Length: 283
Image (cartoon, rainbow, N blue to C red; front, top):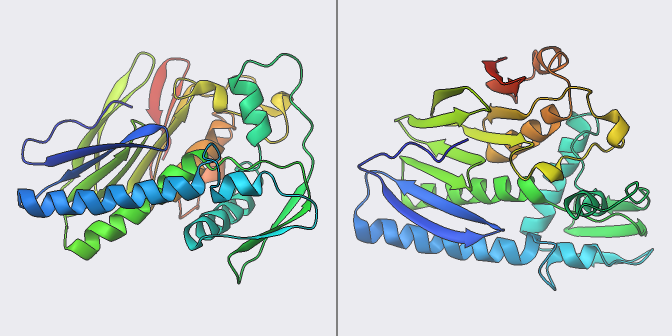
């Protein structure tokens, strides 16, 4: 997915966070007001990264990953909300979306030889209080894409509270969230084909072997990956979190499985896949 097509009347602000570049494109606001919006959004991004990144010492997630058996950790409200969304995603995707594969993802990204470390351990997220308990150590959380989607949804709330009603938010080139009366043109680029979509009041997420390709890990192991997977999947959904969840889950299915899986699923909007060099719409 390329960067969104430039829109001449949009004010653009960028900020580095969560190992990517966030970009706010805001229409219909004066320069000073738009700058104030951007400052508050970027302060929130930094605060979220400090809680959700597993690479930051002292973050909620890094502390979770060091917990001992029987230990309970109290969390920030934002981390707790994100974990509950991930827990729901695990259920709705039949276990395909799993944030506790941190060790497997790190093994894959580092090019480690041999099989990935065995999955072990158990964490319990408390639904009514902002806390998590380690029943058995071994699981490592990597919020990855859902963390970026959660951040985009949070930024949307901030901008709406400021009175903004026409904007496009991006976390890198793979996660977008549009809001307002006007559609934003976005180009989806596959290995050989491309197509332009117009994003309005929805989120779009891309996942694929060309987008941090080595992070694609099947919870059931490498043997469970489809024999001929899609090289890219794009999904639209009402929120950035849902778009991230489903783009990840659908990447773990064969092209033949996807249409039946998405039929009747109200969380999924449009689905585009790039398979064998052909970019096509499935929903």
